[in-house]
Amino acid sequence: MKKWMIVAALALSGCAQISNYDQAVKTPAPLELQGNWQTVGPQSKLISKQAMGSLIIGAEGDTLDCRQWQRVIAKPGKLTRLGDDWVNVTRQVRVMPLVLENGELRYDGLRLRKVDRPTVECQQALEEVAKRPNEAVIQNIEPEIMRPITVSSKPAQ
Image (tube, rainbow, N blue to C red; front, top):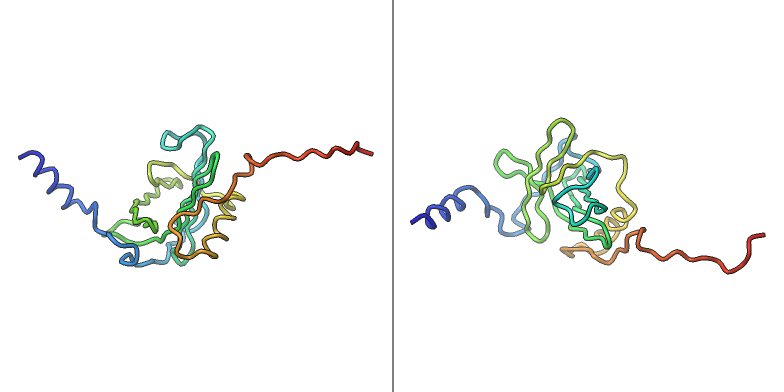
């Protein structure tokens, strides 16, 4: 009996209201959500203390969830409304609420702050999304920190 009540409560709570990416209506972002958001410091929802999370929200409602550490995982999506809440819906149909409080964005268990520009890797991911508009995940970007350093064998003059 308890199992049925829990299942019914989950169904009524709206956990699965968007079941298809195309079903979600891309909604222009309010000014306070537009921009480049980035984690500050270590966060328990990231794989490592050195990992970084970013969320880019465009004026038209396009989004890019970009996580980086030893590799970059970028998930394009769109901003929409689900009832009274703003949510990001990725092409993988993952629906995550956005809560803005005191200049800090709460998203997918992360705390993000607005920054002037995305990381180099997230900028590259944005370019890849434009080239591959139907890809659900972009994973072929190597983080700057992982690139080998080339040392010239010629002596300095």
